Length: 329
Length: 281
Image (tube, rainbow over all chains, first blue to last red; front, side):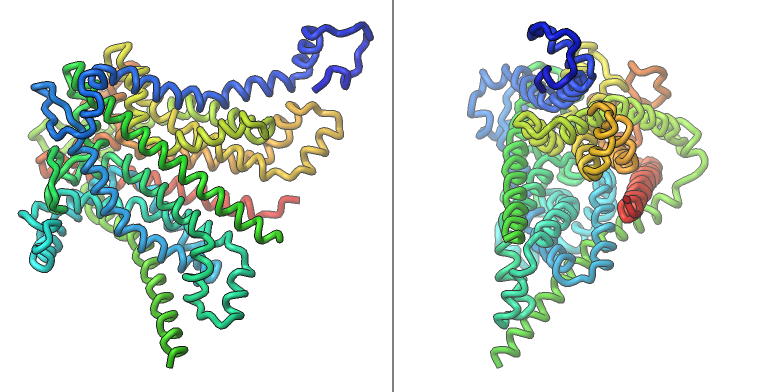
């Protein structure tokens, strides 16, 4: 970095300005500065997102305060806005999705990381990666025309018959609703759980497995009691990633959830999510108050996914460091 | 007896994990199968050459949406790729400081921001001041989504370039900038190209950020400053409409979109796999 490293013609004491100019001439400093400026664009953009959302939601933040998050009424005409039905719907659909996707995803990840021969594992992982690339509007399309009729005709009547004593499975079977949205979301987040968990499981040092097997543990006991606990933090991280994605998913949910702002205990009832209400109402919102309410919803969604993602990244990094650290020892 | 039980549990649970894997993998084939079955029947030459038919009439196509998607993706790449690429160079070559850590972490978080929130951001920046929807606004939303993906994968591929190549160039007297430009980047060129393609495939299917940026249009959208149709938004609009003929069109559009996205994915991933397995030295 010091100017002395470059051959200097006149040995007169170079002022700070001179040495800076000299470093600029060599080009490296320019390249450093230019790429630094460009790279910091992500920080600028992220801050701008927060700033714009904060600024543009000032009306509702001042009028409703924290009550915004706990009020059930959503009436754009009377300018009464409460986010509770949307927050509730977002949490319920994401929970249903995780209940389906986590066992399935972790099971598949265990198979791919521990059991399948490398060629098969790579081939299947390739397919899983393709599954992750399917656009969400395509899931919505299949949801409307395949999943919803299926739920309405077969699955929901069955659930009402078998488990109808629970408030979870009451009411008419419309097909659209929390259950449909949860199932679609589950399919969408499974690839994320599988690919991240597989990576994490593969990073568990070999000697952990060998030690357990040598002690007489069966293959499953080795996996479940040694390998999975070792990778626990990373797997939890993959679930957080999936949760963040499920919370923010828009199109597929909008197309199958029914879009009614109700808080209902039944999974078969139709509902609404934060992302879905923004997608449906944003371009039609006429009053400033309505726009501000939607912006505040977006802010809530942003903060929620931002926190979850931040935690998930830290957890995944921690696990892989632990894996490599022990491997070296 | 106890051992036999433990072995039984082991075999059962391991089989179950296999079942989980089979279910997950077969999902893709279900999706593909349904789209080929429903979309294939509705796909015709008209789909690629004609404008959407007015409500109530059958026929028509989505030529404007295909062109609209193309324009959106082109402009989005012009925004996202240079920023992502240069940022990736910073992270891989000049980074290593706390600033690089901050950039890397923020990029990962930006990657996880729901696309609808990015759409609102583009709306406040590029729609609100001009008071009308436009291709530019849609491209801005998609471009912003491309930045973190391109940046992180560029970094990854640059890091994979062997240290010896760099040292060779530096030993010959090249400056650091020269080394990066003529040795490191060309060596990682292929990986970076595939990363850009994958980023493009990812945003090609995005619908949510376009809903209130480029909006929709039943006609051609000349220039860059007007609302424009795009394939994903068309699929959404047509699928939730109550007309059977529109549903057919939605399936056809779905098949085209999915085909495009999967094709880019397969080609770039295969090219990448071959590039990495080829001997480097």
